[in-house]
Picture 1: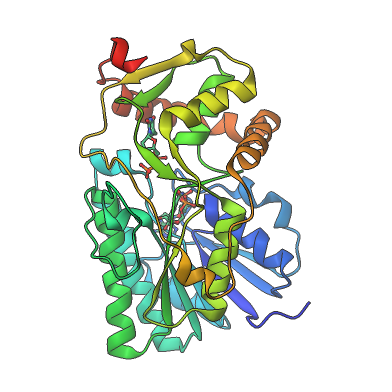
Picture 2: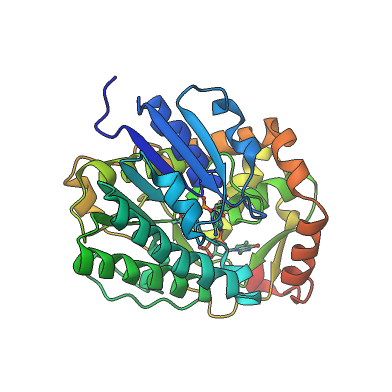
Amino acid sequence: MGHSVQHVLVTGGAGFIGSNFVRYLLRRGVPRVTAYDKLTYAGNRASLADVEDHPGFRFIHADICERADVAAALRGCDAVVNFAAETHVDRSLLDADDFLRTNVVGTHVLLEQARRLGVRRFVHVSTDEVYGDVPEGYSRETDPLRPRSPYSASKAAGEMMVLAAVASYGVPAVITRGSNTYGPYQYPEKFIPLMITNALEGRPLPVYGDGRQMRDWIHVEDHCAGIEVALLRGVPGEAYNIGGGHPRENLSVVREILQILGLSEDLIQHVSDRPGHDRRYALATDKLRALGWRPTIDFPRGLRETVEWYRRRRDWWEPLRDAAFAEYYGRNYGGRAVLKGPEHG
Ligand code: NAD
Ligand code: TYD
């Protein structure tokens, strides 16, 4: 199958969405795909095991903040999709230094080298969290950015560098703003895989506050398809929302997981809330739909398959719940009060 991009550099290609996107592009017939990844705690070569032998695949272990490494990797690439980032809100609340370095400076370095080498297409993968809390209605791409966590602020700052590069130098970059994503190969600190893996180990499921916060879940395959459409048909300087259209309260997601696993809701433990916790995100997606994209995986099916995947792939996630994970877990959850009372079920 012919594809109009020939060689894509996927930064953050050993992370959750990046590794799924590498697989997605190879399946779609892109002849060459290079994953470029620093392999932080969240990066994992094992997530790429099934493409390592593909003749069109190459892996580069490097940092997007390193200009020379980026320049060397970009040679021969006609497109860049930037997934590389520090991505966990709770970690950004503990220490935001790496978030600024990778999400802002790293984005700048990539843009500079893409400009110098004349890359034809650049997608910067951002998040719906840049809009901040959305008590009602649906965020549109023209809405103001009101990030409220160090993570979302660093992502918004990265977007500003992208827009500056488009306006100042004509870098052909587009921005995507995806909603909360789930599916295989997601690091177990994130909400859905944390709840699944804790449940599989019989540990308590820590729900922040009342659990009534709302997220718009999208399956990683639908997210990848949306990014591909933005890559091929997006207009430089424009942002595109990619939302699943499956709004759910956190507590109901946890209940669905327990139901699929046939486990008791007694495992649910309400704990003190995340500071500055955004109650709700929700996206209007007409802009990307007008380019021919739509999500296809409904949430109950996607969640069932994801639970099934984690049940089958203990070989993938058990090694990740290591001493460093336990140390982070202690820092993030150790100081939280366990909430009791009727309002917390
Ligand atoms: P992830 O944490 O699983 O993966 C991030 C990857 O980036 C890791 O492999 C890590 O090693 C790599 N990385 C970190 N710093 C790097 C650096 N300096 N140089 C090179 N590589 C580096 O994250 P994810 O969930 O796959 O998210 C990917 C992108 O999508 C991020 O930009 C994130 O902001 C965005 N996003 C994620 C979601 C979601 O729900 N997961 C939703 C919307 C947008
Ligand atoms: P998360 O996966 O961290 O994504 P984000 O905060 O970027 O949306 O969390 C998703 C939701 O789940 C969010 O409302 C916070 C909540 N949450 C919990 O209730 N308990 C947890 O242990 C975690 C990690 C998240």
